[in-house]
Length: 315
Length: 315
Image (cartoon, rainbow over all chains, first blue to last red; front, top):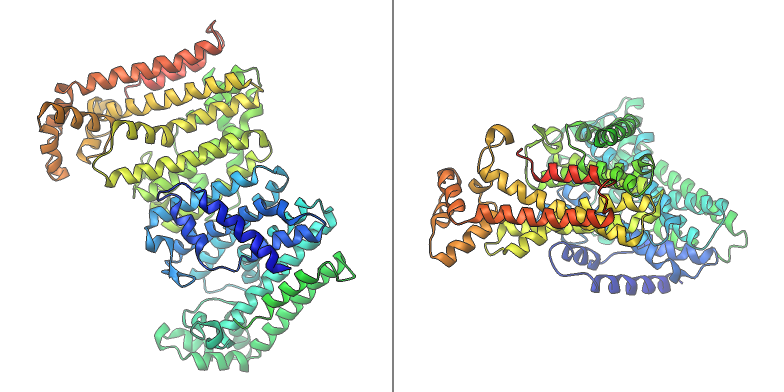
């Protein structure tokens, strides 16, 4: 079922890209949208629309607007993070230049709104969440400079930066299908929970995943001293226990840090287990929302499978 | 009359700024909106609304959205131009940093849309013109790298980058007042003409204005080799006449260029006179649109005065 939505959406994106004028304002949009991607958000919009009795094809434009918004954030975030690669290919500012990436991103956001404008009923939801995503990116940058980020703050940032856009994608599909207010709240809460669990799973995979599956250096976040759930919690437990393995490693230059030592410390401190339990709690709560929407489990089966595949992934 | 609109709008902006949350996402918005500014665009929205029989207070939110959009473009354009100063004060990226200026600008655009969303009838106009402004900025950057920009191309760029937002400001005021389609076209055409004349006047003031009035170095554009109407036209006439005063100066390093020589050449080539005639033609055509809207001249008097003051200014 998900594959059908994916094909529907891919064809819609291709048509949109084919209609773009030539030139440096639009070429970066075509380039970024042409990179391999999971298209989770737009597929969620179509699935949510169908779940509540709508024809998913009637939500294609809204799904496109959400994917354009997501790609706008990628284009600008990559500038801010000075990232050379995105999905294994040069980022837009690396391939063109920073100015082109700023301006093309701006235009992509405006184009997302042009598409959304056709159905003002979803605008408010979109706007609220769009602003939350900006606030999340702001917190993310702020946390890089701060040493005292708490777990609560971290989860708040992840909620804004990642989870709310999944919630928005689902809620907008529900609105298109004419779902009631209660169902809208439930499907949005489901999306937020899946988003949080997804990100926490990402943190876990960085430290404990198999590089042969993830394709990334094990412990890249630890080497960079990135304040993830694991590191924040690990430092908390160390302070309570009076140990300092993580703190000692973090005091070293990034290239001198011993990643296996840090990974072992996170395990010894019980942080891996704690994080896994947290993922499970978030997933259970999210799936419970699906159950409330459809106690029979028949209509929500596809969404449940997608959520489980996102949360239980090993890569 | 204009002063009333200006006060109305200033109070509205102040209320909006006072309601902004603290933090680096919103502080740059408050800072940029707090710099001295003419507020031409939002005042045009209020005046247009009143012209067509609406209460200008019912267009305050739309005027605010247009001013936020304008400030979003300033924040991002200043990054692209590496401008250290805006209205005599540090630009946002200079006072904070580039990342903050990118993100705060993004959020300001989203907030403009949040405000606009309350009346979807103006969204399409806003979107069309917003995209044109992005395209204009793209052309402006492209022209910096090109040597063969024609007058037609330059006017096309200025239309997109400057004139269409004045047109949008006026059209949105007209839509709020419930003006008919024909009146909407006329007031937009008036705005576009005023915008073009305003920019050409700007080019003229750079070369021929009195630094004591403009507060800027005379011929700054010429020193930077900026392809304005005057320089493009001057080089055209030189090619036809087989002279090369401008070309010889442009071949020198910027600091070695003799500005009085270049200014005199533009005068000798008849370019100053030609540009003044073009400003007059544009102004006449724009004012003719006002005449069609209100042959008595009574209702459009305030807009006429504002247009004339913008076009005939010496600073």
